[in-house]
Length: 547
Image (tube, rainbow, N blue to C red; front, side, top):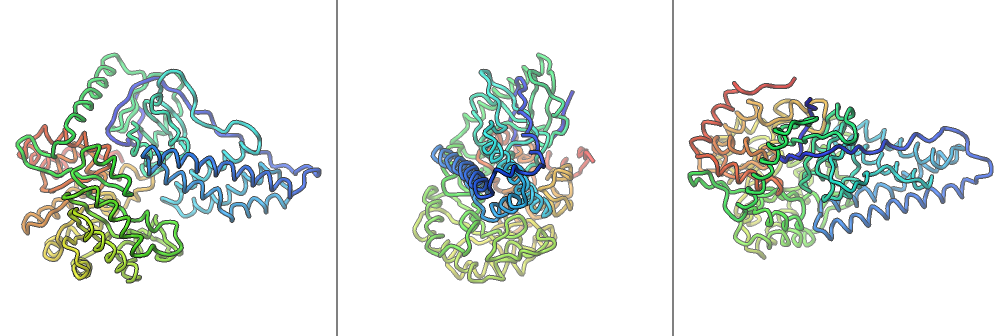
């Protein structure tokens, strides 16, 4: 029996199932005892919120001290959710209406969850995170154990409806072999943290709820399937794949290259300067995508030029002589900023985001470029700067000219809008390079929101339409000696990486944990074989959609 879902990463694991306990039951909707004063009950709620928030902050500190900055950032954001004054106001309102403390907490969190769910996409997935915090607060109020990771004296495959960020961050990697969830999508925090920690995971596997404790399963993230009650032969195949994975790690320190010596720089996608440590540990030859949003998110005002310059310098100093591609602030859509983006756009994914948002606030744009130029002058890295969500050669020419006026040497654009593929020859005349963001390019090409599990079958860069768009851009780059890289999730798929190289992509950037597998896969093929694979994929003859 095979259970299908969405794989996170390329790993594979085998072991016995251990299911996570169901959430707490919904608190009874009944009047509060007349002997319980509102003020006293409000203090109980405040205390529970404070303790849960403090716990999240402590978990964040531990994660960051262990080098898990992305995990720490997510946990800290959740702690801020628990401390949101408007959340306390909602709970207070329900207490004043005569409800019990636990019911008031339940209703207060529910109000916020509904608001986030109504926004859809990324924000709807954050509603699940908020629900997890609510469960912890209710458990604290009741004085009972909150739902959490089961304990075991033997390694196991964890099966759950979904995991909160706090639960994912608290996983004991010596015990948890893999994760299977029936809910959640490829951009849920479960998926993000599993990918960052190198956990083998399959999410959005609805039939996983049929699994029972003790059943042996194979979690195959590369295929996005869970094999139930595997045979001895299937288990031996898994062990062989794991052995090959260990061999792949032995290639760290070697440059990315095909079997016949065609060099393909393998770079890392990073979200904060501290992420450089893991990238270097995994053998990254540089950085192909540095996301600068961490400097801006959660702030009422944009950071100063000096604050930005220090952060960029911190990253660049870790890569002397190596390529570092920094993306300008990519705000809008699922990353709104109060000082930059409109709060009431009916369809923000197709609205004022990326470079469009920056052009409406020229000081934010010019300050960031100024900070990048300052950091570049203080370090020895090979800095490349690119703008997100560029639609045509006119936008590209505007941004490149502005970047060069600040003293930046390599200025390019991201290809995320399908229009870039049709105008690739024009783009190549004005930009120093193009970096293809396959996540957005795929969702816009196939009209499938990449945060929605309901259209997950369309969210694949293997679709011939997406590949042909990439191939047009790569061909235009080759004709004009313009580098064309890929920095989306497609680069982390070893087989797809071969196809991309065969189409003429000149560099690949991915999550650090994927570097080993991609490096090993490229080393197995010649450039001629890669071109053959590319031709097959572009034809679409072997593409079988799961619609």
